[in-house]
Amino acid sequence: MKEDNYKHVEVFNERVYCELEEAYIYETDIKLDSRPVRGFETEEVFRKLKEKMVVYVTIKLLQNQQVCWDGPAVGYMEGEEEAKFDELKVEFEDEK
Image (cartoon, rainbow, N blue to C red; front, side, top):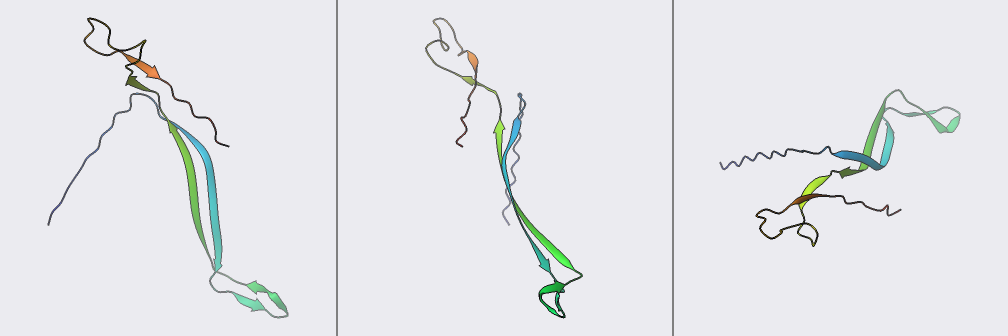
């Protein structure tokens, strides 16, 4: 028997923001013991009901992160050993 175990740990220094973009809910009701009503062809009587549901959720996760930006204004300068870090904000336009 071969067994692989992995552990993934991530420390978030910045708060993660969550936005609900959209949600779709599909549901169905299943009558388990239905029987027709005398005198009414389109009506049914039942005592037990089973409900099933599928939920699709679209979320957006956003987090400010520090990145190493080696651009013209920020980055390695003469005599500097490490790159400078700057906060890079990425914004998305709504596609709707």
